Length: 419
Ligand code: UD1
Image (cartoon, rainbow, N blue to C red; front, side, top):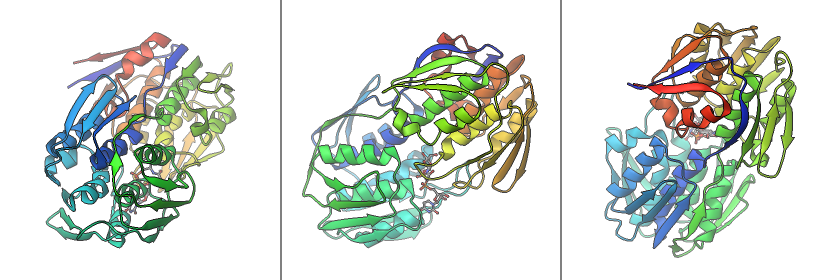
């Protein structure tokens, strides 16, 4: 089992590039199922979740070529609409394949994605919307058996919560439906806009992505095209946390600062200086300790993202004063708190609220990544801590960060991977 070994207390300095967004790449790969011809996606990160999505595509009969960060998918010979349980379980967000496969094949057979480290992950909003678009869904023995007679049918849909995954499934199912779909209370995350931009380039007619109401005029067919995945805003936020927690000065390149609008004010509140350029952000940590943050409430975009909560909490653990976090998206998203406590952090949990009493110093310790962003929090803490931190279960971290130790080392971080 691989581990990450970090010797902390080195202020990070220099420049670092952000890779493409995992949370955009996965729905884009699902979207390739709808396209005639060969789709080429650039800036697709080399992550285990992307590998899992490519395996699903190959299983369905697509020809998949992957060279570095470029993935080419030819869905011409798509031969099946079922995804085996083993592949569904490798990646929680594999449910986003449902809308695309059903629209292309007229049927889909997928196992339930089940719960995950963050708690239950219901898909009722996805299923309710897809049923309204004409999909008949039988749920039996953990399997979703779905059929549609003819094409999917456009409909007026309203989400009771702006679910990212449900919005993606609706875009994929409705893009080639008969008639127009109007989706109210849609998710507004940049990953939704990226998916809609891609589909529109393939010939779809989607208006309003990035806003609360999206209109999708169904088209007969989509033609494959080339597309570049947007930068990963959560990876960018994680690097900012590493710079802030270590008292560093780091310029983050190939980023999209507009997508960080809900996050950047938190770093300013902590006393960091930010220089925002068109595609870069430089963070200079304050002399002395970070300041506490009044409260960080996770919200749908453009609010503060749930995915940045854990790494920011690791930085706040070292701040001067008490910080309050309120997690509004997932119910069990504080598992990292117990691991940070092993390093000396003082965090009190009460349901969705975490009170972080800042301490002057964290100490290296053996810890385990509990989930993807919880693992990122341990890296932030380890880089700032006195002594050596050993992080186990780093498979979680590898799901979302491309060879993180190789990215951070040029900034002066003392971090390496060991068997
Ligand atoms: C969520 C995040 C997304 C992040 C991703 C990966 C939000 C709004 N979404 O997207 O930014 O990139 O995790 O960590 O922050 N829900 C239901 N029924 C459903 C679907 C969702 O009740 O059918 C609930 C979930 O339990 C959760 C909330 O809605 O409380 C957000 O879910 P959703 O946006 O769908 O989650 P993801 O698509 O996984």
